[in-house]
Length: 440
Image (cartoon, rainbow, N blue to C red):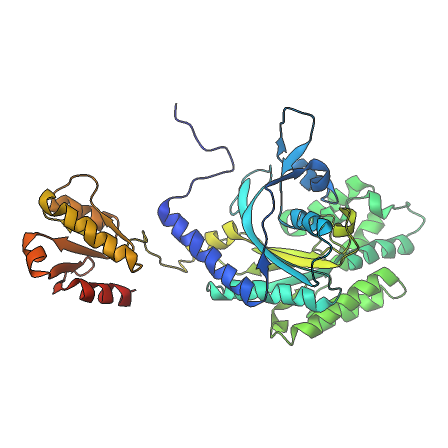
């Protein structure tokens, strides 16, 4: 019986890694253009750290690590909590602290399209700024990452945790005699966040389980279904939440985000979605998700929000913070489905083929000369004849073959075969180097 990779994980071929590294390198370049610098944290943390304000659902998904002693550890489920712990331990760092990380995280959940149990996130955070411009900059940066990869038809869904708290206060006031609702004790956020997955009837059943009465449920569903453009949607909710300070504070933050987004040229992509809650309990203000219209219904490909209390919760000073993560797996799934990129099968540019074993030392020397000037190449390591070497070059889709025999060594003119059109040129090594550097 063959050993398989654990459920929810997968292996990547060299060809797949070329695509993954291409995507990550493009994203990294955009992150750095916005002034984010990278840090690296441990892949595992104390469970106490991971459980701090992660939410009941996420806490269940943490991979626990068995140790010889009683210390309780777990694999990180996102890149934000370890960063917050790092910043709590390093309060002297200048603010705003802008960091990025592109790394794997783990969640014990049922594997699905675009989401495995081990997956990569590309994460940025801005810590130290309470201005909504920090949130807007994170959104704009994530959008630029997706645009540079070729994504179109993007939209940014926006909501605010304070607005959601305002909804709860509203139904308390609207129907006070039905039942007393303790906001902090009820998973109402998680129920309404499932609207897109389980529909209105499914959410209604979830709210019934929580203990809300029918009139309260209908009032809440009516509010979260408020639609419209950004100014229109906000105005409608202002009338509903009049006199509820926490809700009005949230609407004010959303209004500021919309106005600031005009400076970044992204206001037309913003849409309000008052059913969105996001699963992590550490969010305290604006929350956002980026979706793309595509044949593959894969959900959001980026998401984040403001978490002003997390760093303090982990033992640091009060530090307002916000951030966003791009899901690398989901991004790549869509790119493959939509045929958005056509990359090489290998990074090898040229194969130095030897006609016989007598000229093999010369083939190795030429390969070394090519490597010194930055040209990726291979030589035969299998003792194959020339025909089989060229067959290998074809199979690997290596663009060029440099064919080397005794005549070529004497004349110092070598055959360079373009493997796509099968044309050959006789060139000096200097001419070959120039041609290989010019080709794409």
